[in-house]
Length: 254
Image (cartoon, rainbow, N blue to C red; front, side, top):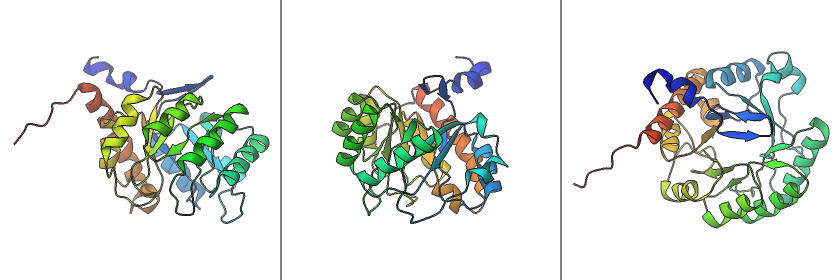
């Protein structure tokens, strides 16, 4: 790779599902927004190529209407995926997934099975993943970084994994990189780092660990200037990816 062709090389798809390709290294959740123009501008600033939509089967919160988004966004330029991030049980996650499939034709799912503490339920996630895979859905499940669980989900045929770096919305960044590195290094499917990602620095660190991408949400919503933070994360992902691929030097002993 030469300096002149770094751009095209880093825009290669990191995940392909059928004819759909994921190229952007920053995936943006939009569940927390109430402004359609802001969603449009944040997705653009982040260079996002995935559009995430969801339902809340328990009717505990509302989300932006697709008809309103369609008036502001060229939705056909995105790869559409669903999410069960509002679900707080395996049953609720399964119900959300089936509503998204049956009402919108969505067959790629950001699968979240979390408890009331908002922490991934690894065992419940594996159970839900096996059911949904049997129904033909493509899955990106969210787990605590545990190698046994990661391998079970890979064996179930999941397209990629999402591993939690820190409590969701905490802004703490990558609290302990070791289990995340273990998962990245020992599974054969892409790994996305999310949860607690609060700044561009955290995005770069995740990519330097070998992550395929990062998923961000609250960090953009709560930033004083969300568009600048989205752009910063876009550049940080590229910097972290190139740093990882460069084979950086090891730390010298004191």
